[in-house]
Image (cartoon, rainbow, N blue to C red; front, side, top):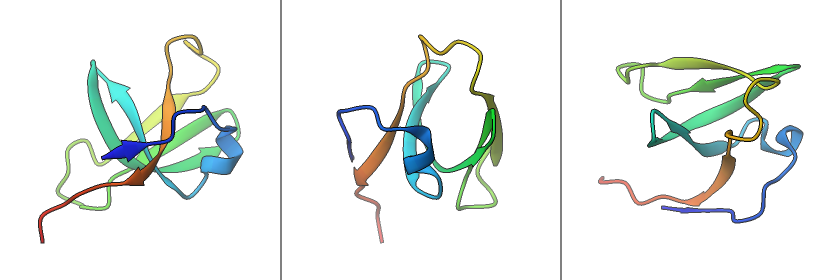
Length: 75
């Protein structure tokens, strides 16, 4: 997997696949901007957790959300 190095405005990531950290592990999800929060949604309905809400006003210094440029998945 490769992700964008520079941080982009969150509005530019709306509807894109992103990677972020959750409990110090990378998490790849679809990103949906919802005003002052965001929804991270898995493509696979069996993924756990399937949806994660993020308060965008909390812990800004620790939050890193990057656009996924490519990802290698088994076919």
